[in-house]
Amino acid sequence: MIEAPVESARARSTDLPFDSVICFGSVDWWYHNRGHFDLQIMRELTRQVPVLYVNSIGMRFPSPREGATFLTRIRRKLASMRRGVVDVRERFHVYSPFSVPGKLARRVSTPLLAVQTRRASRRLGFRKPLLWISNPVAWELVGRLGEVGVVYCRTDRYEAFPGVDPERITRYDRLLKRSADLTVFCSNALLESERAECRNPVFVDHGVDFENFAKGAEEPEPEELRGIPRPRVGFIGSIDEHTFDPGLFAEVVDRLPDLHFVLVGATTLPEGWLVRPNVHFLGQRPYEKISAYPGHCDVLIMPWNQSDWIRACNPIKLKEYLATGRPIVTTWFDELRRYDGSVRVARGAEEFAAAIRAASAEPHHDAERLRDRVRQETWAHQGERALAQILSALARPAGS
Image 1 (tube, rainbow, N blue to C red):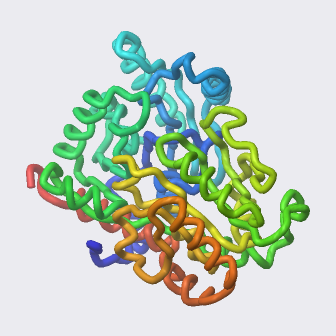
Image 2: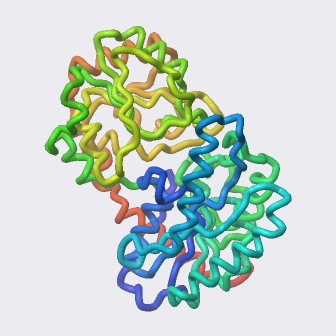
Image 3: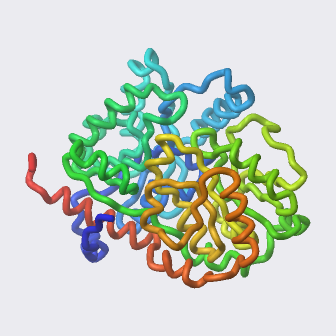
């Protein structure tokens, strides 16, 4: 793990080289998990400057073959665009400009996207914005928004995301890494494999809303959990085809018919993909209320697949799970090397089920030790680190 010393950037807030941040996010504020890295870091940067968060402008074009999911994505994107610029908290503005993914549409939508974003930022009083890019497609906007600097946030292997044009995303990714003033990695696996491609790479880890998740078990039990018997095995987060392994999960469920599995989060899997009496799909819940759910489970799981996406991931939910103090069972990904002794790693359904069984027998064992592992790793700390790295990068002489 590579860390740079955190300077007290807050003390210099009146002397920043930028007066605002325009962030092209990889998710939509209105519909996705608000625990995501770029959303959390933007929240922390509003302590210093106002932020215009631009909802995902689309790395892929939804396909009618997705069935009901296709219509859902179209409807929610149109609804997001109709909102305009919304002040969601002090100095945090969310915007969904009109944009159309697809090769032919880009010739028209890219210049229009630049005009819309520039107009929105000017109305907010932005004069010297920092451009923060978490969505590689936003490479097309570099140099069009009067930015004083560019930060590229490489959180995931988006070229491995289902449905994207991998050649296009890879090309934009490499252009950004070579030209950005700073490339922020939150995965050591990605950093180590791509360091040589970057002009200025740094590692800034995920944070955690520690207090919220640590006190989850002390909060009132959510009503929909009250009728579910214990032991409860929880998965909290999006159930997506590029991360979640439905085959593994189904086999584990069948091996543990006396345990009850609680899934809290939106899903892109087909409706009815798993029907079992001991599986309870609760759907997506607001981020502000999510901390109570893992706290009222006995074991927390991450049944990931073994894709290129997962091998390079550093899931935020790992720290959220640790903050609850509940035992964790997961499949392997490289970032777990930093958490040896804090999680149970299983390979295959038989091992996974056995690990859950063992963990469910002692759900409160070692709770404080697990919490201590992430107690100091708050989003406030990571926001300070990110700001210090940005200031350092922008202070470098041009061309260095």
